[in-house]
Image (tube, rainbow, N blue to C red; front, side):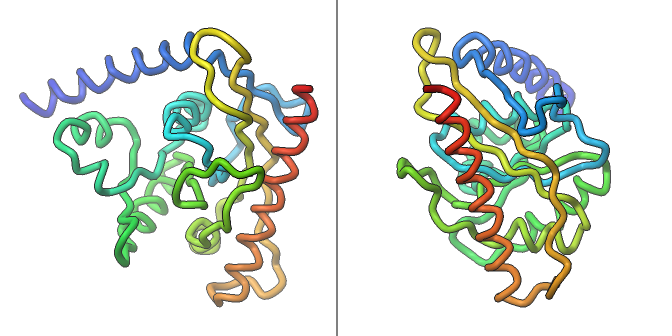
Length: 212
């Protein structure tokens, strides 16, 4: 009975969260491919982008809802009693930020196999710089092991609730990992991580240029 009540409450909570994001942030979603009008792709993908604010989780979970996006959440937040019931019922995958953790990798592969996409913040924490920090290579490992394509995206600027400029997000196209040297060797993982970091930087530059 408790499980049913939690699932029902989480569903209602997600509806309220979606309404809040739409009304407060008024997200303006653009695509690198001008002919695209939805982030629903032919197959489950791995979304990677810059991490500007703790609000990113709300924004991306709503924007990528049509792609059935599962979002990686810090395990220490996931296990908080006040949040756990909601997060576990809303496609969130816990990841230990401070220890050796492979559970998130197994859970993410399972999600991709079931037809859900995965949203990852490769920087591991929020940043206010003009460029994202070094990307951790976990998302490349997941792509190698699952065969999923990677979709870079960029979030622009600070969040202005209800008034001011709308929050903007530019979404790229699905990309395969480089075939040459493909595997789990550190050099390959680092190289691909940096390649997608540069793709996100390019999207950041483009979205800022469009907003001027």
